[in-house]
View: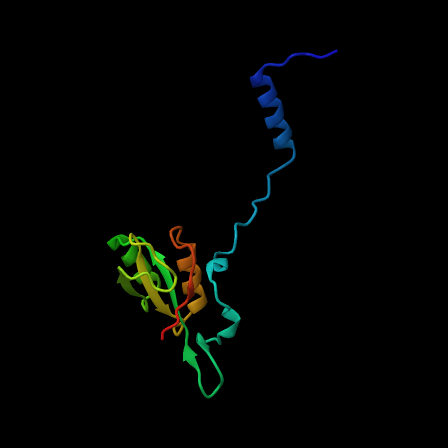
Length: 131
């Protein structure tokens, strides 16, 4: 014996069943630092890499929209960033993007990288290699 239920009745039944199960635990999103394409474990607490007698800062690059608003926000997060709009960099910024180059040699560099990576328009942060 089957009974036909209206859509609203089914919806309310499902809603009450879900409510009875308790709150759905919030699943964490992906770690923003996953956008960082180089090994952060190479860096010491000062943001430097290399042997004790040859420590150096690591430069990184990423792309953003070229608007003043985006540049100001990035500058407020990372005062080491230099903007090179019009250059693709090694990371391959598109013509409608602005290349940004920053340095790990700053206080709380991991937090800075995390905040940059949290920006929705930053797809990847990679090590900048200069020749």
